[in-house]
Length: 337
Image (cartoon, rainbow, N blue to C red; front, side, top):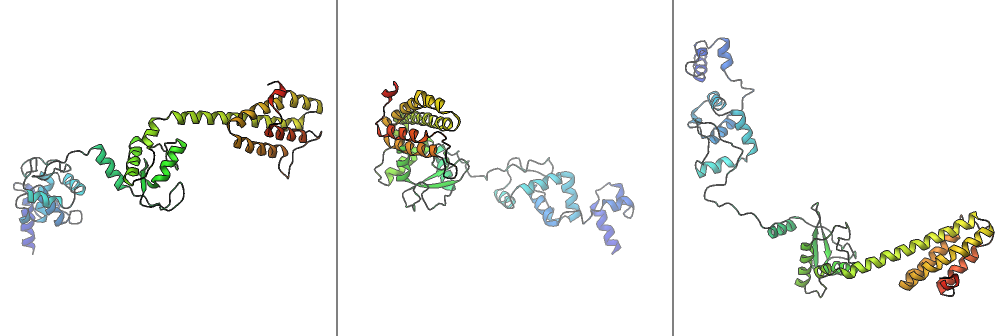
């Protein structure tokens, strides 16, 4: 009825408010909370429960909203409730009032900070080993084939976790043999370097499965043989490039020079240089030298659809010279070396 509505509207207004004397005026109408823009009664009750507002269940929706808005910064309470979990209010009520909790007659505390329940000790920070073990368990690997041999993995496998969080399985025996043979302490797929902890874990798992394999940690510590091997490989690579440059000059001279100039270049520079470099390669690696011979002959002949131009007939002489050097019938002493 109109009388009941008049009493409800006067009850919402605070004592001493001059607008309460004129409920039908403009100010009285604006004091009434608009239903469409106001929160639900469930939200208001949950906020009142967070700030320990006494007797909030007996208050009407309008009165409760006014108390929260004027005395407890309603907007900040609403943001804090969105950040916290829905079960925090029940746990705080069961544990009793906490130090720094909000009261009805004081300023609101920071509701965004979560405190541990009373009676529980703070957990100690995890050690580095525990954190590493937890990280390894949390990252899952899904490959069923060994990335090196492409064979099906068995139980004797090693998990490597990359910096981006992806994990991959390796067969322990295959991975150890790969590292010991090549001296590359990196993952074969991504070339990411294995840390000392990864190598130690690999050795430990190899011993756990009873595999008679050399230690990769000791191999990394004593890396002098691998450095010597890399130096020898670099020297071989340089010699191979020198031979390739000489063969390329032979082909260029065949197509551009006249017979007299071509003969002087071959006898005075190209033949002695090729014989000198090829002998060093053959002394170090005979198999590699044999492969280079076939490669150089194929390059000098050219592809079938565009063979090398030989206007003066010097190509068979060059090919016979390369074959004689590979067999050892021509030596560098013939050219003054």
